[in-house]
Length: 218
Image 1 (cartoon, rainbow, N blue to C red):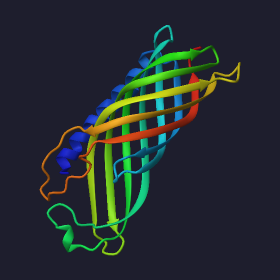
Image 2 (cartoon, rainbow, N blue to C red):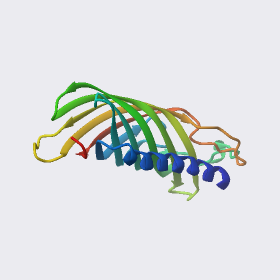
Image 3 (cartoon, rainbow, N blue to C red):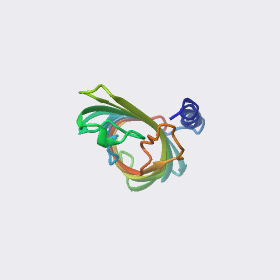
Image 4 (cartoon, one colour):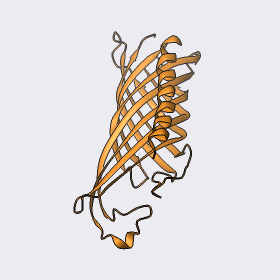
């Protein structure tokens, strides 16, 4: 990816992140959650990821429907035994070798939550929304030292479930567990001079989140 295209993609994600973070406090946020994430992508260059997320939640309809805005950062490493020749370099000219790689995702998300069940101290919500991700992958052949990298902006839809438990009556802090699936695809495709265009395939991202939620208004 050229530096101009990479910069354009990062500006898009930065703008979304600024809007999400800046708008949420002005909407009288009901809750702020800090969560750890474990995720798996079906894309072979991404794989397993760990990270963290901050989520703002505001009520829209008597707390039955909420708006949630989140920002997350994930990363992971992986290894393969494959060829490091790509683009216009024919793979027949390269022997397979051990390859080490790492992937990083920066996500911005916006979702609606609908309460399915619960009361003052526990609730279950179904979530649905949109996600924008900036993805970076880098690989290095351990035998030849040949390396390659790629960047891409993905977007897609999320669906999931979220459970919250507030066991302490006098404290505005609760426990939160959620899981979801995101179907992601490239924001746009373009020609690359060396013929190597990674991360152009659609993929599925499955995520499990565990963390704490602080209720700023009860």
